[in-house]
Length: 210
Ligand code: PRT
Ligand code: ZN
Image (cartoon, rainbow, N blue to C red; front, top):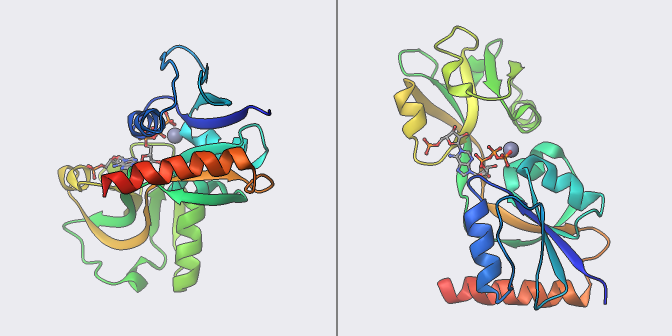
């Protein structure tokens, strides 16, 4: 029987919950922080531990059969994969936020302004759909400090508690997308019996939590 591969985040916000979900499915594997691949001893499955940004493409290209990753990362990488199951953890929203001392109070006021983000693709589509033309400044991190540094008029970033925005003097202004961890599979293998079996186990773990 073919051994499946599932890609999960190696470390970060989704790692612990992803490991916990797979363990709760009865899968037996070592969770060594140093290894990149861990075989499951009681199911034909290997676990690949990766940076979350790489997971959608690995699944699209068939290097992994399955993956657990934030919907925001899937949308930003514009891959073609199947959504098998929303997993109910890693919940957050991608929001546009502005300095709390500014006068912007409607979307049209973002016309001609600059917005710093690590999500240029999702933000670009959102602004286009709203008919807004802003200057999207793509940066690779610490988005929240860019208005304070004079780098941008607004930001677009993930928010969960809102604490980071607040401590940087920013207020959320518009919701761009909401996100949670999703189980995805390669487009070609959605009807594999082994994948169906795994999805059933995951669904019963999720139901037991309700
Ligand atoms: O190393 P690797 O590349 O794998 O990880 P990463 O650093 O890129 O991602 P990581 O671990 O930070 O986040 C993984 C996924 O968790 C994201 O892609 C989201 O799907 C989800 N998630 C849920 C979040 C948050 N909540 C979140 N709050 N990802 C990031 N944040 C950040 C946000 O960018 C901001 O800096 O937390 C800060 C805001 O948090 P609050 O609570 O202050 O609002
Ligand atoms: Zn990442």
